[in-house]
Structure formats: structure tokens, C-alpha cells
Image (cartoon, rainbow, N blue to C red; front, side):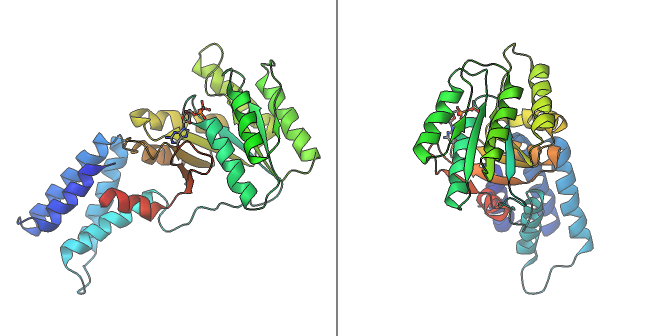
Length: 293
Ligand code: GDP
């Protein structure tokens, strides 16, 4: 992931050009690496402008060389884009807490619903799942199977295509039964293949069930589409946090950065495999360290 940056750092630290020339070269390499990793161009320039500004306004401390200091500035600014030193806030702020998952089909939404249920069950919460993805035929069965595996109840209405009603009745039923954390899986594609209809449905579910948190699930491989997609979901349902799936794959993952900037929402978890426990808490610094090598 973002290998180009790693190479640029190596070249910068080991290079023989003068500091000023090396900085210029590094910034160009960084821009190229970020853009080719699907980070939005506007975001890339705002990042590199911030770095340049700090170079102009700050004096490196005498304890470290200025090349090392420069890399630290880059590291800080990249981490800041992903939330900096703030640990993601994982525990529900109040109970009961209703989470609505949104995202396009195939990103791993249903799998992630199960992973989240498992994560919070292990933390001691009374968790339930609602299957409102009515357009993908096997989605409910898949969720029911996961539910059985982790011993979490799943609400669904096989054969019923009214996603909004299912979501409402599911949430209502689990609230009545005093469940503390209710996770609603929604559709990633509409029956008529129209994006506008899907987004209308998201908005409708959002307004009816009034979730405490909308989680946007996106695939690490989404690429340049990430910004627009995240923005559309955000407009329909006020995205509060992000989960990036398939971080174990070969995808560059730069789209994550765009999704963060489109929604202003923090990344909370990353999916690192197909299994129920393959969900990691997102750590901005570790993520950037991985990028910078
Ligand atoms: P949905 O259409 O968004 O509900 O997607 P699914 O939950 O059915 O997942 C689509 C595919 O992605 C399945 O084969 C999952 O096993 C796989 N998947 C989901 N999350 C991850 C992940 O973090 N890593 C990997 N490697 N595969 C994943």
C-alpha cells in the first residue's frame, strides 16, 4: 500500500541533493504516490501545502537532523488526516445504541455486521442484528448463519421486500426486548439497479429508525470513486464513522482518505479477512507508519 511513499522517504533520507532540492523532490514524489493511490487531488494539495507551510514557519529542534524532522512533519500531517492521536471512540455513548450499516453491495457489509456484533458481544453488550438487505437474495441467510455462529439473534422477514418496514420492526422488537446494541444491515443495491432509489431508501430507513450511528462500510479497493460515494451516502444518512474492509488485500487503500474527507467521519475499524474475528480497531499512526515504512 502506498509503496511509492516508502520509496520517496528512503530516497529523501539517503539522497545526496541539497536539503531544499530534496524537499521539493520529496513533495513531488509524495503527491504522485498519493494520487496514484486514489487519494483525491484536492486533498493531496492541501496536505502538501500544509507540510510546506510548517517547513517555512517552524525551526527543526537541534536534537534531530532536519531531514528526520521533515519526515516527522510528513508523518504528523498524514496521521492528522486520519484522526491523529485520537483513539476512535468505540463504546456506545448511551444505551440502547442503534447502528445502521450503509455501503455498496460486495464491500463486506453483511460480514462486517457480524464482526461488529461479535466485537461488542465480547465487550459484554447484549447485541442483536437486523437484516434489511432485501435485494441480495442470500443476505438474510448469511446474516442468520453468522448470528447462529456467535449466538446473536437476527431479525428478518424472508420474502418481504419492504426494507424500511423490516428495519423499523426489527429495531422496535429488539428495543422492546431490552437489547443494548442493535446493528441494522441495509441493502447495497436497489432492486431496480438505480442508485437514486437506493439512496432514497437509505434516507428513509435513516429517518424512520433514527439510528444513533451510521457506519459507512467501504472496500479498500474502491479507488477514486470513494469521495463521491461517501459524500452521497453522507447526504442520505449522515455518516458518523467508517469501516474499511479488505485491508488484507492488495488494494492501495488511498480511497479511505477520500472517504474521511468527504464525510468528516473517523475510521473506527478495518476488516482484515473473511473470518468473524478479523476486525481490527483502526490506529491512524500505525496506518501511516505502515505507509511510510
Ligand atoms: P455485502 O454485499 O456488502 O454484504 O458483502 P459481504 O459481506 O457478502 O462480503 C462480500 C465478500 O467480501 C465476501 O466473500 C466476504 O467474505 C468478503 N469480505 C468481507 N470483509 C472482508 C475483509 O475484511 N477481508 C477479506 N479478504 N474479505 C472480506
